[in-house]
Length: 249
Image 1 (spheres, rainbow, N blue to C red):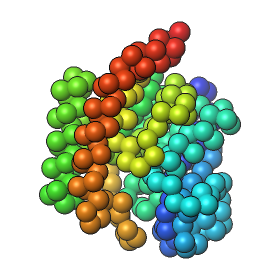
Image 2 (cartoon, rainbow, N blue to C red):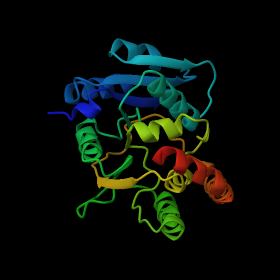
Image 3 (spheres, one colour):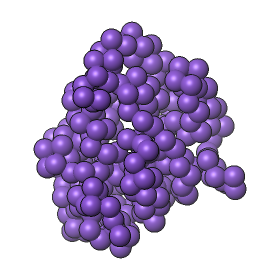
């Protein structure tokens, strides 16, 4: 039985040109978490992503123009905050994140030890998830940086498969969220603000189609941007300490 503290659950999905995939993902969520609401943030798609998501039963909020992955997540957090959801489960809309793994995130939040739970595709001893050498090297590099900066080890710091409780929703809907690639910098920011972060093993699969936001030269931009963003987060230590005091009060 679901803990009463988490009865109001929202699954959020940023989406850009995911027609042909997103409907099946939504139906998978419904079959696993029948009591959860589903929100798709349609980030200026040029295909039928929004219509397909609505037909599958999701609430759809659409950006008039493409604003970025982070902006889509922030739109979802603002919606969750305004509608007073107790927990947010976030996942990609391309089929890489499995609906069957959502209860793993939810269970970890229900145990009460964490404010943010990250689903790691690498944490399981028998993990066989395949990714490019460049991307895996980047994930390990930023994992090491986070270990140095936070004292916490993250095996999958770029995972967008996450669960958030009310404290995390409040923080991420406060105007601090980056608009493009929210990954290691957001984890550092949350840590500095006093949020409790945890990681659990989950299964993922390769995306079934569409364009990845890490295609082409984007990983180079991502790496440079993330290093700068981590530096800026550390420069704002006083700001995060004020947030920590507010969250603990």
